[in-house]
Image (cartoon, rainbow, N blue to C red):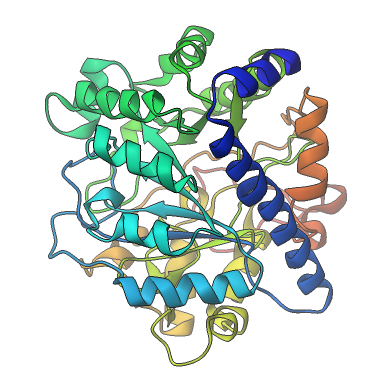
Amino acid sequence: MYWSMAKRLLWETDKRLLWKAAKLAAWGGMRSIQRHKRRLKKGQFFPPFLYISVINSCNLRCQGCWVDVAARQQRIELDAMDRLLEEAKAMGNRVFGILGGEPFMHGDLLEIFRRHPDAYFQVFTNGHFLTAEVARELRKLGNVTPLVSIEGDEIVSDQRRGKEGVWSATLEGLHHALEQKLFTGVCTSLCRTNFDLLSEAWVDRLIEMGVFYCWFHVYRPVGPAPNPDLCLTEEQCRQVREFVVRTRARKPIIVIDAYHDGEGRALCPAATGFTHHISPWGDIEPCPVIQIAKESIHDERPLAETIGESAFLRDFRELAARTTRGCIVLERPDLLVTLAEKHGARISTARQTVLEEYRRAEPHISQYQPGSEVPEKSLIYRLAKRWFFNDYGVYARHFDAGQWVRPRPSLRSTEQVQT
């Protein structure tokens, strides 16, 4: 598998783009994490990675979307993006996730990439604006990897995306990216209607097309119109983890997984402090699906102080780590209401119903399934996670020696369960 992957990298890529990815994303990302570790030892905090939603607008209306895509357009303007990126880079950050809405609807997106050649950008996109011209420009820039979202076959994808013709338009955008030999990925939000996409045949097709990495998210019923019936079952969540581990050991394609360490223990990237999120309004949120905030990138203080000294973000990380090694949005959404009320946090999106949504939400299974851990089979992934992507000890106080037991999703207790 390793030899096959090496051959793909050597023969199927633009070597200049491969060098940029190695220098900025791989090496730059590792250095950012090492700086993060050194900060933690000093009692300081700044996440080594940031997700940035540059715009709320989108041409689609997907099931389960938490973004107010139909609201009045809001975007992070060019000058504000420059300040944000420069201050983050000063802290050692080099890799940024760019989200929306649909990021390519931001008229200055390519200019943002052009102004920051020393940063690497992963763009989450539906592919509809990834035209041949845009793909050619991205190849010239060399510091962007498009991550194209595909939600199933033609029928399921169009149903999930809210209109006809979505699947074919997405594949066309993916084709433009691959034609320019961009380092391209495909992501899928797995739910009950597209779970059968989790197959070796699908991964083989991606490899054949020229895709270099894939990312399987788990659907979360959030937003103004959540659909709990789409949530995966406990067994399906376990199968996702088993499939990811098996694919990593067998197939010449990178499989991203941000929700487990090398031993297969669950974790939350926001709870570990690995990443936080910036909304189109500039609000600093724990993660993209948690739309409450206390601070903003538009605050007068430097970004390092705004994030590093935030009692709200610190309490979120502590609350999430104390509650579960999984996803607090899925398991204990009610606690987010308590957190917001404690800090007087504002709703950081156009609609003002987020707290009520959390109050109504029922608990669901997440990636945390103690006793069913699936360790990495690939030595490279195992070592990489141990050195560069782990929980940084944040769960040690609460989950050592089986001292804590996760509440079952059917129980809506207001207290933690301790043995």
